[in-house]
Length: 169
Image 1 (tube, rainbow, N blue to C red):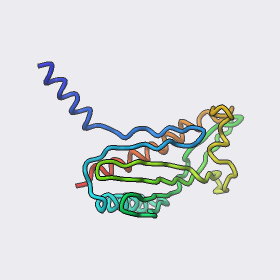
Image 2 (cartoon, rainbow, N blue to C red; image 1 turned 60 degrees about the vertical axis):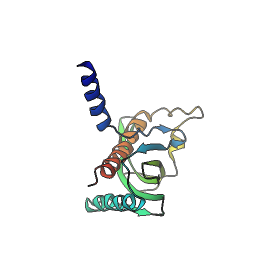
Image 3 (cartoon, rainbow, N blue to C red; image 1 turned 180 degrees about the horizontal axis):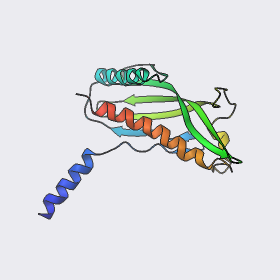
Image 4 (cartoon, helix red, strand yellow; image 1 turned 90 degrees about the vertical axis):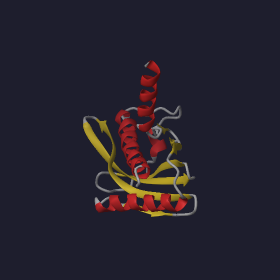
């Protein structure tokens, strides 16, 4: 009986598997590799294009480019991607996200970068993500909420993409 219970628990756990979490470092985000059900390259590209189309229908600024037999790039703007508080004032930032995706029939590797950061008034900042960290790789004072808020944003997007890819019919 215990073996059956363990088997059921493991089956449920595997069916609820999620992609690894993207973690922000002073160098940006480390790539993550995700296992997916077997899918052809053509179908993977088709699904990725369909995902971008669903985002555009929600008036989000995303595009797909550099499509090849084993890679593609999805770029977009994300409003309120992260925030921090300075002297009691909350600063929200919009970012450009670039998702470079290298794929096989059973997995994909997501390399996410944030090449541009904007103020909430759409002014491009000279700051990039490494500028928010000190020489020891720790967030500078005053930017405590930045890491958690940005990780939440990118992981929500990555999970949404993952769920779209694995739930195709």
